[in-house]
Image (cartoon, rainbow, N blue to C red):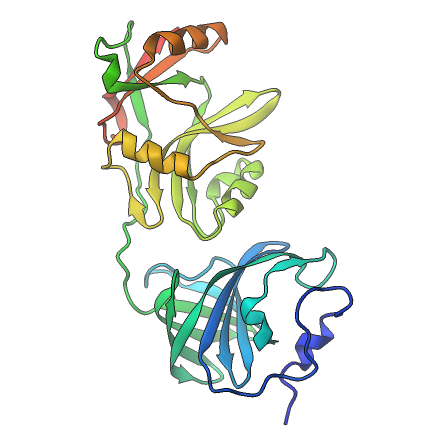
Length: 315
């Protein structure tokens, strides 16, 4: 009988990597477990592994599982992995095969609908991943993965930025607004999907931000400003999160969702926001040499273009 783990062992030195390197494959128990691992290696990807004949048949999926049937994702067939990999997580040393951080993104069981050398149809039953998928071979080790069912998922919002109307003085009903600094930077909407963002084409320093989202989908609204000689993304709104559009949510709901992301890095941060604090925020903006403040109605939805729900008040 062929050794299904021969390729796996040849690629790894058990004295250098914490990965399991068993001498022989496990006995086939006829199980149907799966694991998806988030792998921050040379490039971020997800490893899909399906139990089959005592090993884990494996595919590297650069953008993760497709969220809807309208998009297929590349899935590169890799060597079979040992059953012990179902629970493996940790740091594979730099310079070793697959070097980088690996975490368990999801695990569970699956049902096989078809399994051949060119096509694998299956149904996942996990906490984060569920539904019907098919893997189909295209060329060599390159396969594609297609979602066969349609989950409830809002489309990415295709909107123009919401802009404040200018006003000389703060609104009298200050308690109905949140007050933020007007940064005077360049507006930027950042769509993140599959750990990547097209905004990184112009701003490569945003790649680590996108990777930090893992498989989470999001659309951030903010500005690129220069602080301390470096460009920084200051985020102040969230328009889309985990398959759900937030543009019709009130500002307070969007703000709470943004703060829950806990965005804090050397090149990105969440902009501070102070409900009802018109005077102190305006004075602080003036002292810091900022153009002014933006007052945002707490109950306002996100409206593309200029809106009276957001007010720019000069310093």
